[in-house]
Length: 123
Length: 123
DNA sequence: CCTAGTGTTATATTTTACTATTACACTATA
DNA sequence: TATAGTGTAATAGTAAAATATAACACTAGG
Image 1 (cartoon, rainbow over the protein chains, first blue to last red):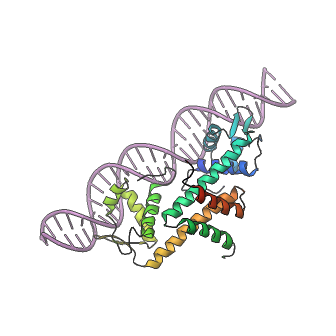
Image 2: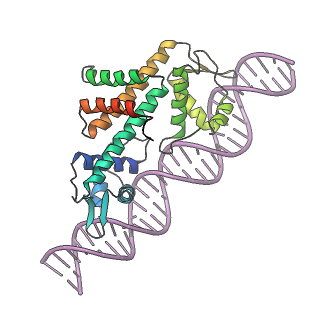
Image 3: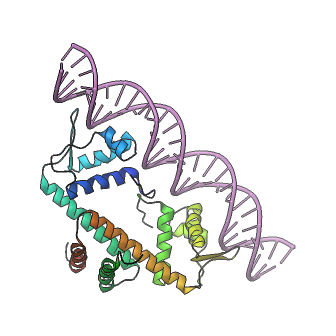
């Protein structure tokens, strides 16, 4: 797994698994790979993976069953809530950044529009 | 200055000064506060400020004159280039993130639109 | 009951960012 | 020419993240 060295690895692992849950790669109620397997998958240490999992457990997205494994919550509302939360966080961040660069609301909207239109074209 | 503990301080300082240059708070050719004063301003150590400045000097945005001070480049094209680069980076990041959450191009655009329309309303 | 697989925790070590402090090199100016 | 203000660099110490490794607690299945 590719890591951004500006952000803690455990934080990136958490984000990665959240994405898998939200996109349905990991279904509600599904068992996750074991912590040791996850550590291999993302090329990180067991303790680092565990730290990421602990936060997801605390958030109620993952249920831990000692001796059996970790499971995605079956409460789908928690998952949709998580998605809207992540989306909103992203939007707030980019808005704040572009606003701080003196872009008006209109400019922000059109810049997003142009980015989407032109992506893939520029070589 | 408020820091995000997930991102290196020197990196946030660099970003902060870049914003001041792009918004014109710091004009082309203008002298920056001394590194010691900057350290006080942002409540960080001189070495940390220096590390941020070093990267900006390497990028050609800041010119260092030993014994005199640090100055914003007078080449305005470098500044406009920097702005477009920062904006594009932000757009690419948010697009990648939202796309990874399974949002379509249309959904991304409308979510930005709705965010802008509704911000300030939500309490 | 034993064993393999699971989550959990603990210890020691390494790495990196940050800090505190000091010193050095250069410039302007009184 | 002395001095104050500037950038620059080096040293030593602290803190947090990540690693390697080991041990413990629990579950399922033979």
